[in-house]
Amino acid sequence: MEKDFMLGSRGMLHDKKGQTNGGGIINLEVDSYYFLGRGKQISANGYPLWNHRDIKEPNIMGGTGGYVFIKTSEAGDDNKFDTYAKIECMGGNGKNNGHGGSGGIVFFDGTNSLGLNNIRINGGLGDNGWRIERFGTNAASGTAHWTALDALLIDNAYHRSDKKTAVDVLKGRKTQYYK
Image (cartoon, rainbow, N blue to C red; front, side, top):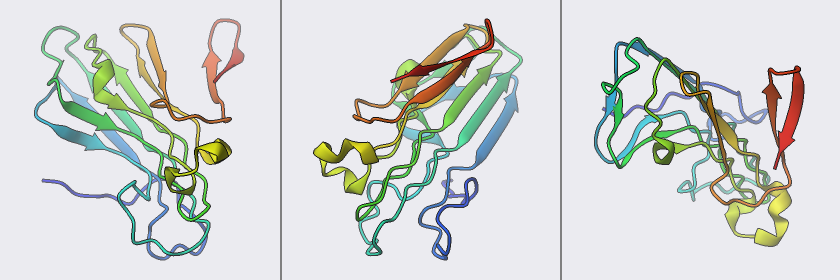
């Protein structure tokens, strides 16, 4: 069953159609998980998505990607990703001279199953993603973190951007900026 929940960052002021909403929050606390099959099994994407071509209003800004928190009590081999399964927290794309929304956050607590190729956290493209020379409208990447592995992923899917992703490094409490 696929259902879109329009939660998260409120989007643009006076957007009565919900076409610029953020991705919302998904919180799963389970014994173990197995994401099976093709496509997105969990999605907290900002709007509008790349395939929303019917938007005619000018300067539509993309909503921020959402937040997915997955806590498991089993850290072993019970947690698995099928090869083509996806968790998405992507930023929405700007439309008609609008800017993209930043990528979201995926947080795994208690699992050692990495699944790097199964996570999509990139920021949204600006101006329909067509004008590469205007890469200043593309948004910053999201992040994915695995506590059991002490691993962090920052991935903007090769989208050029002049935005930065801030990471608070606990050692010394200093914020590092990565491009």
